[in-house]
Image (cartoon, rainbow, N blue to C red; front, side, top):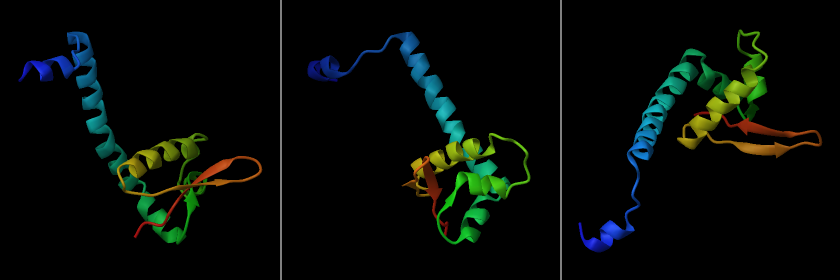
Amino acid sequence: MSSLEQQLKPSLSEEEEACVYAMQLACSQMLPAVLNAAVELELFEIIADAGSWISAADIASKLPTQNPDAASMLGRMMDLLTSHSFLDNKVVRTSLHASRLIPRVS
């Protein structure tokens, strides 16, 4: 490595490097876990059956759960799946609030 490259490369302390490594490990396990949960909950089938845009709240209403936080949890799962291009989404503004909609999966 040239001296210029060494000067431009940010130096991290051991603690910072350990923190970055821990974050990489956590993130590398997140996508497979969310994908597995989506398959087990048959989320892709629910989205495909909707035929068009569907909200996380609508998906949650089709699941056999009484968890009041289900829609919020599904929304976070859908965000991760969207960030990895498994899904796409759009935001629809209503007079009361914004609702994120998930499109049909082909």
